[in-house]
Every structure is written in C-alpha cells, then in structure tokens.
Length: 625
Image (cartoon, rainbow, N blue to C red; front, side, top):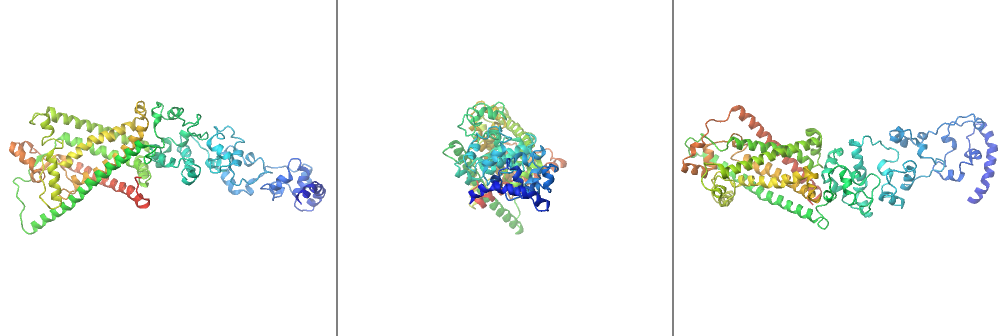
C-alpha cells in the first residue's frame, strides 16, 4: 500500500495544485499537498510527513499565508516563523539564554525544520546540532566524552548535559563566582551518581575526594572563584584519560596544568594525590596509615582525658557537698592564718604569653573549623557572616598562626632562660630540668596520677601538688607536639610551592590529614579537657582567674599546691612571692570579660563540632570511615 501511495503521490499533488486555488478562494484551509505542488523541489513530502511537524499544516507555521492566490502571485510577504506560538517552554528558556543575546534564533540551530525528527534522548543528535557552529570547541569530539557519545553511550556527557538544551546561560567573567562554580557543578551532575559511574567503569569517588580537599571545601562553602575546579585540571571539553599523552592530567603535562594556578610548580609538586582516598589501603597506603594513626591518637587522647574529666567532675561534686554538709553540721573549716593574703604565681611575661595563646587559639578555631566542617550549615553561616569569604578567613587563620609562632618562640626563650640563665634556682641543667619548678614530667607525676585516681574512686585523699600538676605538664608538652604536627603541616599547606620544590606532592595529602585531625584534637581538648581542668572543676567553677592576674590567695595555695608551699617555707622564701598589690578593677573587669568570652566561644564551638561529628553517625554510621 505504501509503495502504491508513493507512485500515485505526484498525480495527487498535481490534482490538488489545480483544485487548491479554488478551494482556498472559497475560504477552506490550505492543504499541505497544495504547498508541495510548488515546493516539492525543496521539501520532501515523505521526510516532512515523518518529521515532528508532519502532522501540522504548512500554514500552522506560515500563518501569514491566508490567501493562496495572492501568495502565488508573490504579493504575500513571508515572515520569520514564530516558533514560540507552540514551543512556549523552550522559548522561555531560550529567551534568557546567551544564544538569544547574540541573536541566534530557533531556525539558526534547527535548520532542518521540515525534516526535523524527535531526538528521543539521543545525545548524538544534540552534538550534531551544536557542532554546526561549535565545530572547533576545544576537542570535544575526540575527548573521552565525545567518543563515548558517538559510540552510543547515552550516559556520557554531551553538550546539553553541561549547557542545557535551550537555557544556555552566559559564563560571564572567567574569574567570576558563577563561571568558576559552573566548571565544577556540571561535572558533579554525573560524577556524583555512583550507579552511573559503576556501570561505566569510572572512578566512583571523584566527587567525595574533591570535596574533602581544600579546593572542594571552598567550593562547598560557596567560594569556587578562589580554588581550582574540575575543568581547571581536566579541561572543559578535551577530557582525556590520564594515560593519553594529550591529556591535561597525563604525568608529562601535569606540571603545566598545575602551573596555571601554582606558577612555581615542579614535577615533585605534581606527585600530589588529587583524588587520594585515605580509606583505600591498597592504592594509598601512606594516607591510610597516617589516617589510622591520627584516628588512634584522637580516640586514645579523648578516651583517657574525658574519663579523667568525668571522674573528677563527680568526685569534686561529692567533695563540695561533703564540705557544705560539714558546715551545716557546725564543723568549722581548718583556719588558715592570713588565708586571704595574696601571693604571686605567675609573672607578667607568663600572663602575656597565655593571652597570646588564647587569642591565637580563638582565631585559628573560628577560621579553621568552618573549612574542616564545610558540609555544615553553621560553617557556611560563619564563613559568610563572620569573615565574609574564605579569603578573609584564610588571612585571619594565618594571623593566628603567626601569633602561635610568636608565643612558641617566647616559650623556648623562657625555657632556655630557666635552664641556663636564672640565678635563683639551685642545681645544674639536669637538676633544673627534672626539678620541682620544671614543666618536664618526672617520677613525681606518676605518684600524683595514682593519687588522683585513688581520690576519684574514694580510696584516698586528694593529692597536694607541687608547682606544676601532671595535667599542666601535659598541656605544656602538647604545645611542642602541636607545633610539630599543626605548625609543620600548616607551613607546608601555607607555602606549597616552596615545599613542593623538594618534597613529593603526596606529602601535602599527609599534611592535610595531620593538620585537620590534630586541629580537631587540639580544639576538642582545649575546649573540653583544659577548660574543665582550669575553670570547670567544681572547686573553681566558673573561672580560675589566676592565669589572668597571676595571683592566688594563701588558702587556695595551700589547698592546691600544698607541697610547693611547704618547700617554699622550708627554703624561707614564701614572702618573696607575696603580691605587693592586687590587680586593678578596670584590668580585672576587662580581662575577666575576655576570659568569659573565650570560654563561651570555645564551648559553642565544641557543641558545633559534636553536632557535625555525631549527627552523621546517627544518620548513616561512623563518620570517620
């Protein structure tokens, strides 16, 4: 039947062409066959019938042709077809597109309007359309995406996956936030789909590892213009596998690729694991064992000291109740002669160094934690409303780091002065190093730890300490470890091009793990354990002011540092430490206010950190996987 139709079709055309004018004159619609009677040399009837517009009459688009006789005489002006009459959604998208801005209209792309067939999600048709103009677009057709689409893989990225079909937005300034975001956001549409990646045998953790990097954290916080995105390393269109010599991520080309952002990049620098996954022991054993070690350090330190804190909190509460009950029963406390006379525990230089510690720690915590927990809403809020952007946060972080190096240098100078210069201390260097005035741990500390544990479990009295307690010594030693771990790794991340000139790039992956986890350890320890030991313990709550004015009443001195007082009495030097005057009201008010601000800020950050760590565990399982 179909072959018979095609044989009779020309005759039908002729018949309709002869009858058409009369029919049109009588007010009837113009049959498409009438049009084909004249235009069959340009338009194939069969192709038009099979096209998406085949069910429409010619005058559905060419609406200005209402009088066939006038049209055949050439009196009707043929206007541009208004596709929006039917394609309202597509027109709305196109209206705001870069194509419309450049006066590229529907027919400029859809040149096959009379033979156009539905694309049926076949991306090859999209690519064929786009390359009509963009035939030299940076090697897409030879890319891994272009070849896959050409072979029929509809999972692979075609033009419309990144740029849309009609709502093609202008990229604007190459350095703008919108442009920088585009170069990463469109890649994640596919690469975040693990099922799609697995069925195409593609690396499945690209997005996860990118988001865990400094670049990805800035992107997630909303500042893509400050870091490298996917297209910066892999290019926008000429995406090739790393083994391809023409690939931008081929080992031979990596130095040039990295140098676009890091001008002094070296071949050693490019050894960085851009998508290194610390949970993959086979591919990245160094990262794996570094992460295991840091996780063990975190769990071990918090496990021991949080138990210590909870035991102390309960035992201190019980002791305070016992003292209160004794007073109610009429038992007078032991009277201390001149109990409220003030003695000096710290000098001004010690107070100044401690203030530097507080300031630097607050700056580092406030500016660093939003980056570490970039997936949290509170992190985005802090970055936007406290710092304005990640660049400002980075500046604040470096200022805090600079203050840290200053107080650490001060500690080294004071330590040298203590060991080699001071004239009021007896003994040689070793005797001073392990003596009662030193912060170096010694055998006495083992005795004190045992005594405290016995007190915790109601098996003995609370120990009376010397000048330094074991937890204070731990805090001091932790500064040195922290400077090695946080300070060393921080310097590497601060000056990557310098360190990348003589260290392999994977060292930056190691530095990132150490810096991040050690920062978590330090902030968590300071804002929970140290705050409790210093301010939160029942006998000192809500604040121990001694570190701010350096002064301590005699009755507290005897209760807390009884052995130190006893030694001073035996040496006859107690009055050398008597305070000549107490600190001023204005100073006390200002510094106490600052101290409470620091404590409240620290505790707030602890709550946010716990929320960031615990909530994902409750929802999906152990976070640090």
